[in-house]
Amino acid sequence: MARKFVITSGKGGVGKTTIVASLGLTLARLGYKTLLIDMDFGLNNLDVLMNIENKIVYDIIDVIEGKCSPKQALIQDLIENNLYIFPSTHGFCRVKFGSRELLAIISSLEKYFDFVLIDSPAGIDGGFRRAIGCGDEYIVVTTPHLSAIRDADKIITNLISEKKPYLIINRARGDLMLDSKMLNVKTIINSLNAEIIGVIPEDDNVSLQLLTGGAFDENTAIQKSLNMIAHNIISGENKIFDCTKKYRGFLGTIRKNLKSRL
Amino acid sequence: MKNLQIVENRLKNMIVSDKKENPMRIAKVLKSEIVNVLKNYFEITCEDVNLDILIDENGKYDIQINVLSRAIKIANTFAD
Image (cartoon, rainbow over all chains, first blue to last red; front, side, top):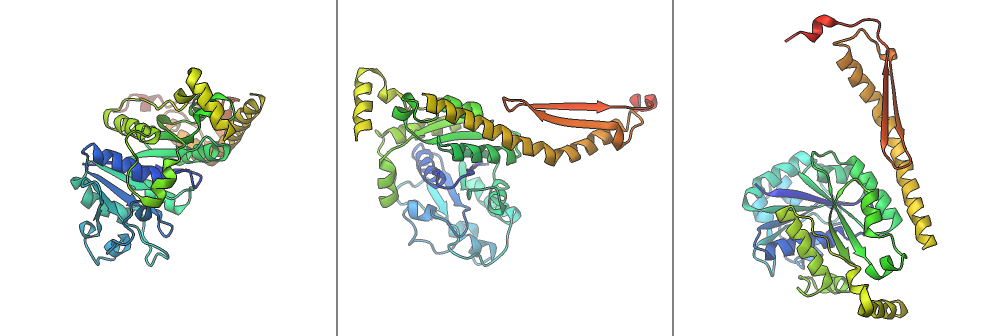
């Protein structure tokens, strides 16, 4: 039985899809069979991020309509053999469906995988409810910005689970946090009733990945933080990437000052 | 530093104020469930139960339940 994670957020644009794609690649690299499911119907972009938009033959609606089996709709990742993507439908949804139909599809596939990562739409409307009905564990993504944290709190209140939801703080700027120009990790953790599972630093490599697809370089800060999140998920430990470390000490202060002048 | 303190206070106020909306939604349902449980042991009606869900400045819920009953149903206490 796979562990099924729903990656969600209150506010849009906090990096859910990027985290689903890159965390999926990280887990697959570690040897775990991982399935990514895009449940942002109509506004899906996971296929673009994974560079498979031209390889889609069947989508989730075709499966619901019985035109193909769930397995036939899966697309294997171009780089990682352990990684599969279940494409969503693009544009207008032809049929009405709920968590029950989606859960039946996931149930038929989960025996082949160790992890299922579900990309949920932002917000707390029907799409969100449909997505959370398909998972057992939840990862709420926020950025260190007021609006995103407030919306994350609303999402956490709306999650009904025995397990406390996990929290990922994305786009954290260690230099700004040290200069008290951005809400720090501790303040965010204290504000939200969730278990912190990772902090992902703001990184220019994301823009490049969004253009070309594929995984991040192992030496980048973002990949190191993703490795930590994957490790936390697998082992249950709680090692968090310190985004301020790079900017502490003598060299760090020089680095921070140079960055503030750019 | 001062600006960050203002932002932290804004965040705290926003979250506490959002939390205040939640109890209103569940108070009615919770009250009805409490009445159903207590009815097995005490003679009470819905009007006898006073339920208040307050929220402190740290965002923690303070649930206050006050129940007045005319009689106890001792027999039910020993039921299998």
